[in-house]
Length: 195
Image (cartoon, rainbow, N blue to C red; front, side, top):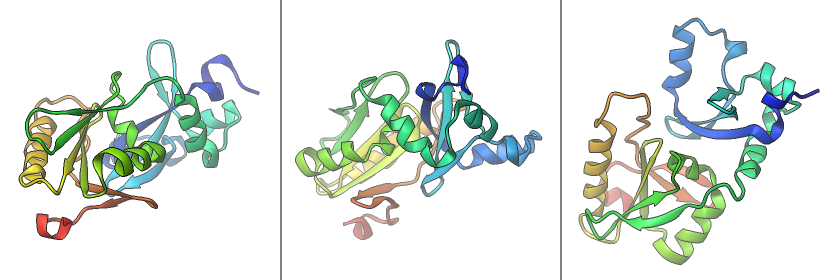
């Protein structure tokens, strides 16, 4: 039986750093009350939450059970719930010709990492596969076109600037990632290895 606050259609996605779970444990949250998460890439996790009128409530196993959702169904359900709610667009940053940002509005840029269809479409039609991606904050997703000299350095510099810009809790990671048809993988550490 579900209730209005924890209804399956309210389930949404967020991207978190793996330290998120450690921080909750250090505050005494027992493992059975931790939010349900799934690995995304490297130090990034997909987490799930129920969208409420004034806030998001992290989806714990008991809340998922209350909503009639199994942890195995979370990702597909959350992605389906996003359908038609926002559109992701590629925009030039103006910092370097090979540095592109993903824009969605609503602080959902990092969530785009979970949408394989977005990457399949844009990598094959607009950006190309010689790219590197970084999500320094929940509302920033940067793409460097590795074929353009200096793009990777511009990505690293801008990601570091944004990651360290404020002391809020929205910083994610400076790790570099590459999308493949089988999902995300960590990028190698040097430009020569990325090529």
